[in-house]
Every structure is written in C-alpha cells, then in structure tokens.
Amino acid sequence: MPEPMSACPSPLGTVCMDPACRLHFPQQPDPDVPMFEGKPVEATTLKVSSPTAGLEIDAVLRMDDIVRVVVEARVSQVNHQVNERTGALIRHQSAKVISAELIPWDATDPNDTGVLRG
Image 1 (cartoon, rainbow, N blue to C red):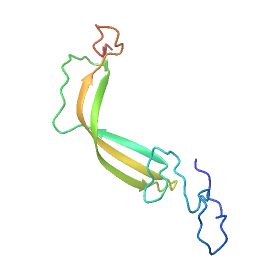
Image 2: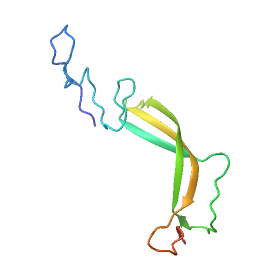
Image 3: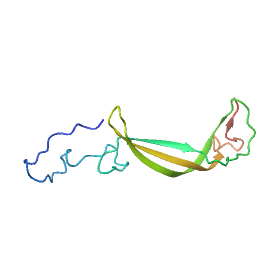
Image 4: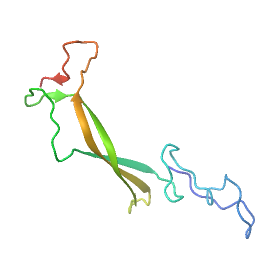
C-alpha cells in the first residue's frame, strides 16, 4: 500500500522543487508499471482472449486431461480505470492469442507430450 501523501515541505506560495515531496511528485508503487497522466497506477490486470478463428493443437485429449500450453499473444488494448471502492488507479490490459502449442512438463523426457492423463 502506498504511503499517505504528507504536507509539502516547501514554504507556502513557492514552487515545490523537492522530489521527496509526495504531494507534488507522486511515486509509482511498482517502477515497472508506467504512471498514467502523472498519477501512480496501483495494480494491473490482463485479459487474454482467443481469436474468432480457433487455434488447433494436434493432440487427442480425454475428459479430465491436463495440458500444458504456451500461448503467444499480442497486446491489443490498454485502459485505465479508478476502482470506485478503493480509489486505486488500475491498468487493464487486453491481449489476443496469436499461437498456442503443447509443451512437455519435463523437457528432459522425450516421451512427454505435455498431456497429463486425468
């Protein structure tokens, strides 16, 4: 949770130049997430959707099988929204699947197909 904003240390009526001032220089909680319009982003989400044309994986599967799939997706949209309950600024990202393939659970096992039978 970000620390609360404190009063500006600069004298009243002067321009604040103190980068430690959280009021005039808000700090981003996660430095890897870019700020939005000068405001700190407190969380991110990612929604991955498949294209309308289905991707095909060459495998015979049964009910309750568990498969290990690697998906390649392209980011198609980024939006920001304020959470009404908490006031936190959230970055919502959407990506569309480009390709998918089964990968083995154990890469050292030549018989591993990426399918665990249920």
